Amino acid sequence: MEAPASKPPQKMPLETTTVHADAIHRIKTAVGERGWTTDPAEMQPHLVEWRGHYEGQAQIVVRPANTEEVAEVVRICAEAKLPMTPQSGNTSMCGGAVPLKNGQEIILSLARMNRIRSIDAENYTMTVEAGCILQTVQETALEADRYFPLSLAAEGSCMIGGNLSTNAGGTNVLRYGNARELVLGLEVVLPDGRIWDGLLGLRKDNTGYDLKQLFLGAEGTLGIITAAVLKLFPRPRAIYACFCAVRDISAALELLDHARTESGDSVETFELISRPVIDLVIKHIPGTADPLSRTYEYYVLLELVSTSKKDNGVGERLETILGQAMENGLVLDAVLAQSEQQRQAFWRLRENASESQKIEGASIKHDISIPVSAIPSFYEAAWKAVLEIEPAARLVAFGHAGDGNLHYNIAEPEGGDGQTFFHKLTEINEAVHDVAHAHGGSISAEHGIGQLKRDELSRYKPAVALDMMRTIKMAIDPDGLMNPGKVL
Ligand code: FAD
Ligand code: 2HG
Ligand code: ZN
Image (cartoon, rainbow, N blue to C red; front, side):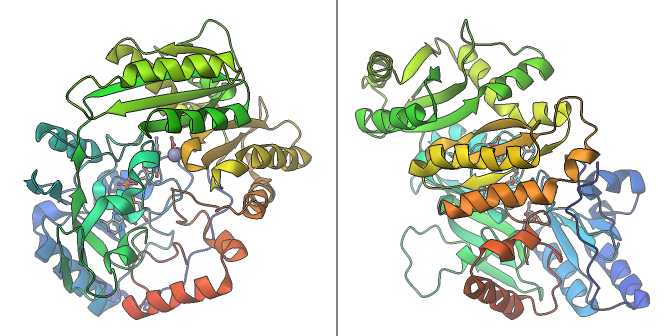
């Protein structure tokens, strides 16, 4: 299904195809036979966004094996003014990782750069290449008795280069911060092909501008991240999970406050899940089931974590917290995971939210963030605004409430044909985003801008901020070769 939000392709800076043909030939030589493909069947998964909302064209998919090869490819592209789309796991939620329709770009896939270069357990760091799958990074850290906390439903296929380029969030931000906060150093290939080696494993370095921050969250518009030094943490020794039904959204937030203060701030996860999410997951994902005996309107998946080798009573504290919350009416019902298997069953309900929504049909997604205190007011006001546009719309909301980040997704009316609903996309986006903005919020908490929100950005971002962003883009990528048509 094509997203009505996509824009006409940008005009390319250079149209001399012979120059491009020569460049493509040089690129093939630079990366060797295993490092490229023009086979339509092999290229196809790289051209389409995972929900099928964006589909582009490209001259070639290039898969360099190391940083020097990336740099050589980028140098050739810079000389020939050949635009590039960097791509990692292609799980972007905003059309950021697929090329435009004009077929001018090359796709630069980092998938073959998947080595863990080193791990320094004493320094609590690991150095990884951009194409490492997030789950592999997590597992490698655990093998070294350490923890890399970035966690999201796409972790089996997204790659660290993509995670850092989108400044991914996920389910552990409350305790550990966004991807941006989990990085100490970067290696980047700049748009002219130079390699910036910023792979320092330092927690303190005040030698001028913090250059890595430019590339974290830049969505591939300023250069190619080829490797990173990641921050590690003591690994959790025990995780206590509970799935609880809450009275309403305000009660969920009171529970969050209560759990943070009463647990010595050991809340790792605080996910809000509205009932329609559970209904869709149970409907579409085999093997999932309601954890509670009756249904409620809102749920929270709450986890406390202990990193202590000794039992320090965190489990009992969770029980006390829940008991108090039930006594004062915040929590209506709750179940504590008695095994890892039961904990995973809770998570299947949460992690399949996106997949089940995709199966159900058309939905208009909103990845907004607002101050935690503004969630109840936003929730109600945004819904009122949506109903004025589509009275039969369905609200399928969930998200990282502990971070003030809601996936305020609107599903098409039951039995809809998708297209009719998508005609209202701009109007619905504007309604929800205006309400988030009025609550001091952002139109993208964690997914990024990509193609999806590029045009909307200017409606909400101050002109001065956009001006600074364009100045940075011009300074680093003056020919506009890095991921054209995205973000700006
Ligand atoms: P890609 O999709 O390949 O690329 C993302 C962007 O980064 C693109 O703009 C691309 O051009 C650029 N890029 C990729 N690699 C590089 C590089 N090496 N150098 C420079 N630029 C690069 N996101 C969250 O934040 N939180 C969630 O909880 C979450 N849950 C998800 C659940 C599901 C089921 C799915 C499908 C997606 C989810 N996402 C979530 C979105 C997505 O997984 C993340 O944005 C992820 O970080 C993207 O990683 P990727 O490797 O797939 O990157
Ligand atoms: C999540 O939190 C992701 O699961 C996906 O960010 C959100 O599908 C979505 O809207
Ligand atoms: Zn999310």
